[in-house]
Structure formats: C-alpha cells, structure tokens
Image (cartoon, rainbow, N blue to C red; front, side, top):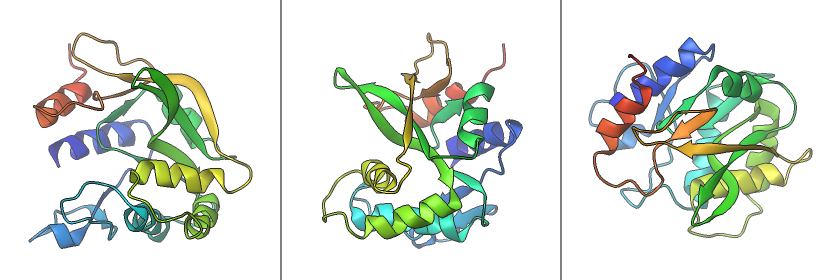
Length: 191
C-alpha cells in the first residue's frame, strides 16, 4: 500500500484522478480512499481470465462515460510527457518493455476510453480460458476491439537506483526482494 500511495500521489501531480483499486475480500479492514474490484485469486498471483475481467469490471464501475481511464501497476513512474500521451482521447494505448531478451507490448500500463474498455470487457468473454497474466489478457481483449490498441515505440525502463527514469519506469519485472523499499525509491525524486 505505501508504494501504491506514492504512485497515486505521482499520478495526481500529473493531472490524473488516480485511484487505488483493491479487492476488499483480501482485507480485514479496507483502507480509506480506495475503489473496489473483485479480482482476487486468493494468493495465486494476478493470473487467469476471471482476474483480468474483474479488473476491467472495477475500472468500468469506477469511471464515467467518455473518460480516458488507465490501468497501471503501482510500481510505475510516469514522466509528464508519457502521462499526457496516455490521457489523449482516441484509441487504446500501451508501451513496450524488454523482457527475456525481446521487446514486447506490455500490459503493466495501458489507457483507453471507458467505452473501449467496456467493449474489450465483452470481447474478453471470447478469449479461451487460460492461466495467463491478467495484463496479457487485458491487452488481448483490447486488441480484439477496433481500432486496435496502439503500442508506443518508447520502451519502459526497468528502473534501478542508478538509472534515469526516462519516459516511463517500473521496477525490474523479476525483482523479488525489497520490492516495497525499491518502489518507494522509484517515486522519491528529491535531490
């Protein structure tokens, strides 16, 4: 939650109405100032069709018609330029990341109009059942709805303390230790 709060503060400073989505079934007492989505996989990671569809359901339920809405992991830092590009109305948008030696479209962050997300949510019901990452499944659903998602040529930086944040930065995908401490450092831009 501390990293999510730091991300939320960053997004609000960039002009977004940022909300943290949680599954209230995972909390004895849910924190204040959050929105709900019922995506829990009960400790099995963010995988599977039900999880992906529940995330889209939560986004739709907590947005208004005509809005550009964004899904992003809480360990993502955006530049103003990137935040502005993602906020532009039009087709759904995502970026690329280098993973396992190849550049690929990445579902850790994407934006679309609420109407596009609603159509993608309907399309998600046609995707064969799999235990794929929710981020991949959401990207797949967005690809199924014309106009297809636009993937920016910019690469997401898998940030470490010695790196510049650049256009968009996230913690290394395979970082397993000190994730909270590193996440807080990602958002600490004080000299």
